[in-house]
Length: 90
Image 1 (tube, rainbow, N blue to C red):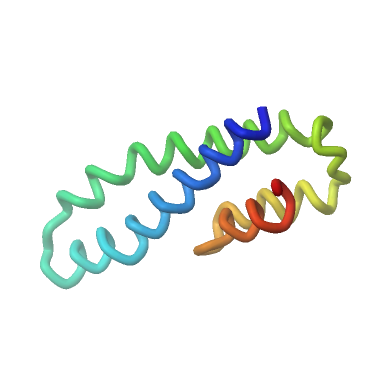
Image 2: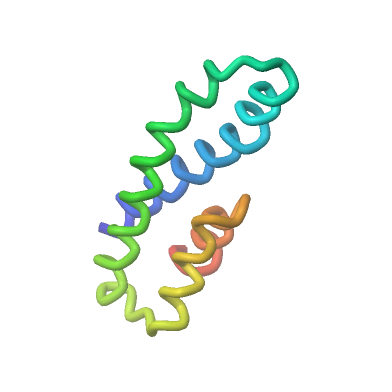
């Protein structure tokens, strides 16, 4: 389960960075919503899967509520999922 969470965490982080730093600027500076539409749905699904897996894996990893809160908070901070991988999953 940990390896699946690591993969989802990595993919969620990449999709968030692409959406935030590539698709959104293109939308607002060039008026082209194509990339936001293309990346939005996969990112949303990966985000929800990240949240669910973090809650499921809590017991396996022996995380307390504070650690789970940090892991969940990192899902909305750019580069946060990479921090979680390095600090809590290795």
